[in-house]
Image (cartoon, rainbow, N blue to C red; front, side, top):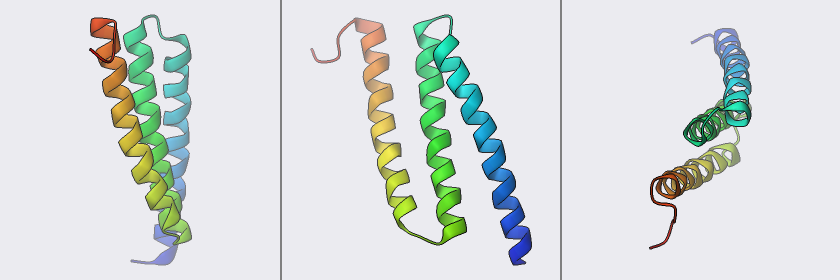
Length: 93
């Protein structure tokens, strides 16, 4: 694969991910219900994880991949805890 094609694709992906993060942040702040805000937060952490992966590919550093893994794990746990709190009113029974 040509390096200019790869750099162009990564730049395009980063621009689109930035737009998706802005829309998810809008939904997280101005969501009419709490479920919409949790969904916005979930989308925001997934987009930030993908942004870190594209930064890692473009820079060639492995630190970005490790940070993306940590964000993915913590984001999943936070989403499950928030969903449980919204359904039952408590996280730990």
